[in-house]
Length: 277
Image 1: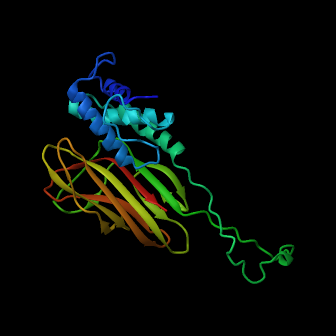
Image 2: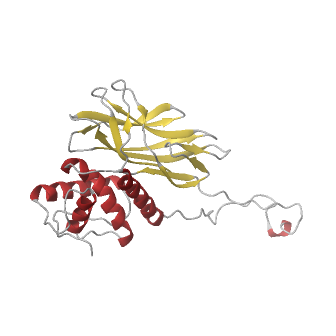
Image 3: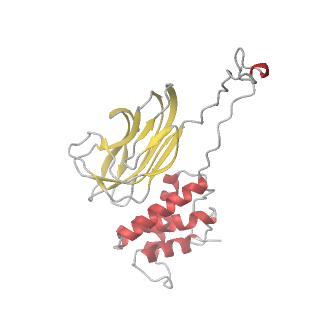
């Protein structure tokens, strides 16, 4: 089993700040455990992760998740220790998390209840008729976009004014939805429906200082919901979560927006998720 020490040491090794045969120092241990727990909490995935408090603690996730944890932890730890986050590391972090999500997120086929009325004429006697057209239930309407280890700054020109999150998203899964790398989920069915939405984001400061960050859910370019504000500092990311229910019609779309309530300093949404069920 993999320990927290092995994960943190491997992550720091990817930032080119240390050799793997050198024991972790106290500040590396403290920051590593903090960022590891913070990152896993922000992912909110059913991986069986148990919060660690010591470097000897075991990482209680499936083996397929370890690479994604190490790669993405490296991106989080690099700034604190003067390490490098080059294009290769960012891409490896993004791709490893995408690969992990393909195994961790399972979306099964939709099933109709046994008690659902078939309707007049929809009986076995009619099924042999050439005029009979069987009704095939539509698949569940859902979509999942994620963003991992993003370093692109979201430009803030005015304090307290929401703007679209900047960065490249991964389209993990869509059923009767269209997803884009720009972070947009579009509803495709002709019939309107009320859907459940969860938007999450980990927000960092593009420069030093403590700021108050707010996350927003936007429909068709208009803000419809906001979460409670969260503070971000030089060493602590703001964690945002927005659960909501939205009436959607064909071609309506949803996006994640953020604002800096304190001033016009840019933000970095390092990790995010936009899910529709």
